[in-house]
Each structure stands twice: as structure tokens, then as C-alpha cells.
Image (tube, rainbow, N blue to C red; front, side):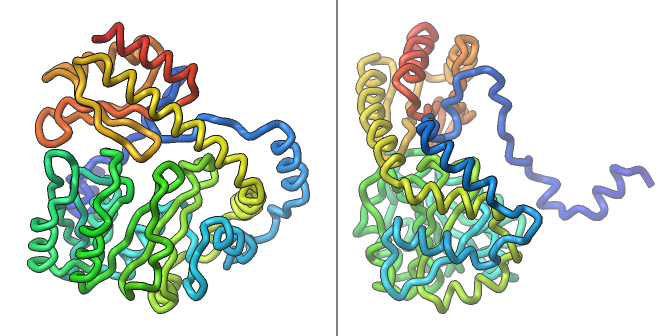
Length: 359
């Protein structure tokens, strides 16, 4: 038997049928494809952080409950009294924990589409069914379609990204509330881009017994630490914590994130600059005339180029030294769409110049 035959025999067919999540190597390109905060820490803050790391004992296991970090997150994220927190190695791990805890024969994950690809991928990994409900043409929730899908599939968990990735918009809060009220299972509001949105469901935790809120510090400016959190009633999180692997938040992440959250004002200043640049970038893209530019409450902008031109324009921008995201859709709601992360003013200017040449 050949190795390929053995692989075909033992690897689940649904895993063989999908592609791994691909992250391109940016090389020396200006990196505007991954929704990162482009700003480094101030030098004085870096020196304080390095001094703290010198005292960190990497020969010991980290605090399995990450108590100091949990309290820092509770304070900085304004988690309501009485709500619990669970931390993950990025929000991806939290999505996986939920799938492992809620999965089983006939169990379903439901989310609007286009949306975050990991909802579908992790559902597949964990043997759950996945149902994607198309958004309206303006990327708003199709509430009747969502309610019909909930009635038909009775999902174990519904994900509502707020703002949505890759479209950048905030869904209507009243529509989201209706979904929460009719759902038998969990509704997880994914607030990965909360720092740029100005709206949150965290103050409403406890109002619904099936509402949880998920966040990450990645977009805030700590993407390299891989830290996500899930907030909500203890009755849910106590069960999910049974699935969480011990010591999942390493000691360097615990130490660094706790320190960073003590300097939250630095990141708030950076995100304010990014929001300002988002507005400038949106206006500049809109003035080009050949594009359909979608309003964004996140730190990226989705735009549609002339039909059939997305691949050529993407490669032309890349040839000028700028890497953005090609949605690689020939049809459907993301047909001919590209997505650019809001960078520094200099990076945004370089992107606009490259796009102008490509058009």
C-alpha cells in the first residue's frame, strides 16, 4: 500500500476535501492584508516590557487560570459584574472549544455569509454541519432568511461577527436581538474589531441566557500574542473550560498582555489614528470612480473593482510592493472584491499610488 493510499484510507474524507488555511509570506512587501495594527510600541514602553520579561520564569508552567491577565481583561474590556471569562490561544481556539463542547451527530453551526472562514472550517474539523445564510446585497443581515434557517436547523451555535469580516459593516442591533431571542442554542457575537467600531454587546451580557461575546486583542495591536477571550454566564463557560487544554495561554503571552493592558491608552490612541486614516482611505477610494467601496466599522475596507479585473489589479498592486487581500471570487457576493487593511499614512499613500497605476 502506498503512502497516498494510507492517507486516503485513514484521513477523514471531509478533511481531505478542504484546503489548509493559507497565509502568504509577505517578504519585503508593505503588509496590508491581515488587519493588523501597523504601529509598534513606544520605545520607553518596550524597555519596560523587556525588563519585565527578564524576570519571567519560562522554566515553569504558566498560571493555568491566567488569573492576573483575566482580571486585566475584565477591567479593560468592562466585563459586567457576574459574568465569567475564558481565554483562548486566539479566538480560533475558542471557536474550536465551542465546537468540541457543542458538537455531535446532527449538530449545526450557523452564520451569515460572507463571514469569517474559520466558523465553517472548524465546524468541519469537529464533524459538525455548517449552514451559511447569505447576506443581503448591501451585506446587511437577511433577517427573514436567518430566522427561517434557525427554525429549520436549530443550530447549536450561531456566530454574528460585529463588525463583520470581510465586509466591515455592523449588523443591525435589533435584528441581532431577534436572532438571540428565537435561538435555542448559543449566539456568539464576535467582536474581533471592537476597537474600531464604537459599539458592543458586552454591556448586554446577562440580558439573554444564550448570549456570549468573543473578542481578541489581535486587532488592538497584540496580534503576535495570540490571545482571545469569551465572556458570558458562568454556566456556559464552566462547561467549555472542561474542553480547554491546560496551560493554553503561555507565560510570555500572560506577562506581555497583562503589561500591555496597563498601557491601554497607547493602543486607544493608535486605534483613533487608524479610524481617522480609514475615513481618509475610504474617501480616496471613493473618488477614483471605478470602484464600489463599502463603508467599514473595522480596520479594513472592502472594495469591488471592474468585472474580471480583480486578479490583474491585485498582482499589479503587489508588483508595486504592496500586499492586500484578493478575495478570489469570480462570482457570488464577493465577486471582483479586494480588501485592504488600514495602515500608516505612508503605507496607505503607497497603496493608493499602486492602485491608481493598476487602474
